[in-house]
Amino acid sequence: MTEIKSNADVEPCLSAVMPVYNEAATVAEVIAVVLAQRPVEQLVIVDDASKDGTWEKLQAATHGNPRVKLVRHAVNQGKGAALRTGIAHATAPIVIIQDADLEYDPTEYFRLLIPILSGKADVVFGSRFIGAGAHRVLYYWHSVGNNVLTTFSNMATDLNLTDMETCYKVFRREIIQQIKIEENRFGFEPEITAKVARLKVRIYEVAISYYGRTYAEGKKIGWRDGFRALWCIFKYNIF
Image (cartoon, rainbow, N blue to C red; front, side, top):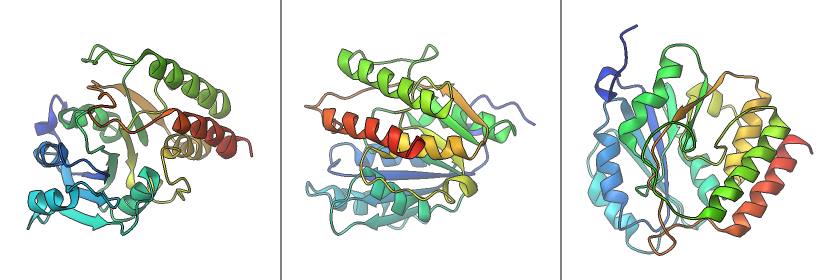
């Protein structure tokens, strides 16, 4: 196998699934960066009934592009519901979850693909807490909460992940499409982790950069989602 050192070394093999809700300020830029990555064969965008002009931005940014599948929910349902819709439309051999903000860097796709393309992994988590990539310094209690949730998830799944709540999760398509996604909001993360762990597939972690947003800049997840995530850890692992 050719050594992979950059996105340019990877042939198109990736469906990026992007849930979108009220991201008019950033979505066009994210789309441009995602589509500029050589591994991206398909971009599936699900607008979850945005109300801030996002839908119009999406139509303008993707008009006539055969690599883009654009879907819109009539009623807002949540990130998990948008991912459920988007994953069903994925057609490339590998699927990655991509947020519509600028917190995660699509130019790092090739790093996440290496374990799968080399035949070592079936699922890859991008970790914000290992490695030497750039990380914006933000909320202390968010990091504490993330660590608590990851720890409880690890205790339930017997995995040793460092970042269960990461957006960047990469799957062989046949694995993610066989999983029934039940959570409609941010409970998707602990749910999918539990269900992947139960399949006994090969899971790897790869260090990624993280450019977090403040709430003023559009961050949406809150403490209620943290409690829901804790419940989901018990629900999908124990009950």
